Amino acid sequence: MKGMTPPARLTVVAGPTAVGKGTVVAKLRDLHPEILVSVSATTRSPRPGEVDGRHYFFVTDEAFDELVATGQMLEWATVHGTHRYGTPRRPVEEALTQGRAVVLEIDLDGARQVRRAMPNAHLIFLAPPSWEELERRLIGRGTEDAQERARRLHTARTELAAEREFDDIVINDDVDKAASALARLMGLE
Ligand code: 5GP
Image 1 (tube, rainbow, N blue to C red):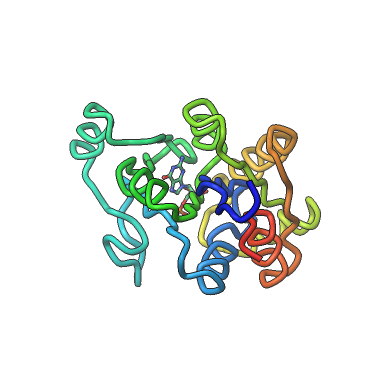
Image 2: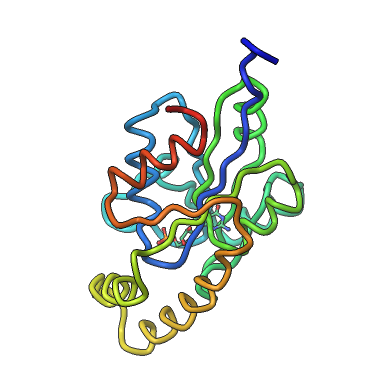
């Protein structure tokens, strides 16, 4: 196979809440603008500064139901027991057909669904440097009340245990290093 470009592969980046997936994937995109970073659909409302179609497709519950019912979601999950998030299938399949690398930044439930739907997908677990650091990041975000923080910590413990289901692990102790490690694992560097 010498001299041939390997077929484009779907890469899933998942990991516990607040591990910094969004920041690392944004850095990866800066380094490699040729990658398609999938834009998810969600039923949650936009946060200040978030742009429809760029950060997410912000949709109603009814529209989300329709996307699921018509098979337009590659995977979807209810995250933190509240809102639904999903990966629109078409842009991902089109990019892969064109030979473009695709990255999904999704939760663990979604990662497991992708594993079943596309056994060839590359699952990368983004891990915190330590549990203490993850706890600090979760609480440091300061946007949730005590009960919500406790719930997120509980979720994060379960999520950390999922590490062994993944093909590779990248430790996010430094955003630049973690993004480069991802790029290397994806065969881009
Ligand atoms: P946030 O509401 O903070 O933007 O995202 C919350 C969580 O939803 C993150 O952990 C993120 O990984 C997850 N998420 C975002 N998009 C998707 C998606 O398309 N599918 C799944 N399964 N999870 C997603």
